[in-house]
Length: 200
Image (cartoon, rainbow, N blue to C red; front, side, top):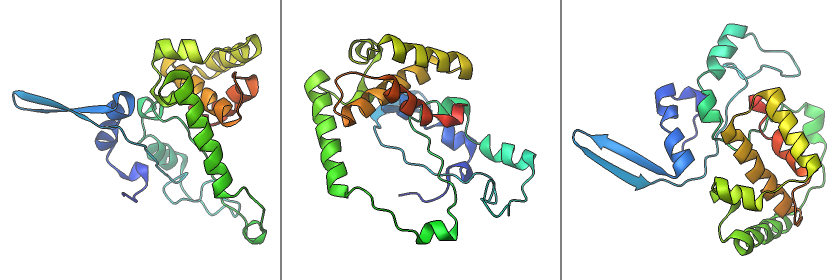
């Protein structure tokens, strides 16, 4: 397990992730030989909002310049970010928020919901939603008029790519499966869009 933050890696190294994230394989070329290997994996990555880590902090401790912040964030290219399904911002909590305990769902309950959602996917299409191809997305991720209008509006407003369009549909289908919903609603599309905020 690698524990460095994502922008701390060289950009050329990060760009190599694009192929396996997209195809689940990686091709290595050496001299006149070329070999392709399976490379399916789940990427979990983290980064600070700026080099010092305090941009947007409630105590306003950040002293990074806009240029430093832009240079830090630009270590992650648009095409690489386009291949990451979910991007969640976790703001710093104030001391009083840390000490205020909140009741949450038990892990066992969440696990049961995830297992049931995966079973729905396997029964419906014999593979997880993440593995759906374009034609399968058309078949299994159909939208009603309201959901379609919301997604089209987001596509135009945020200039989303075709890859983003398909990933949003697959993510919305997964959200619907977790909610035991047979169809994708506009609420599922809205939630899926929220998880791709870096593109806005």
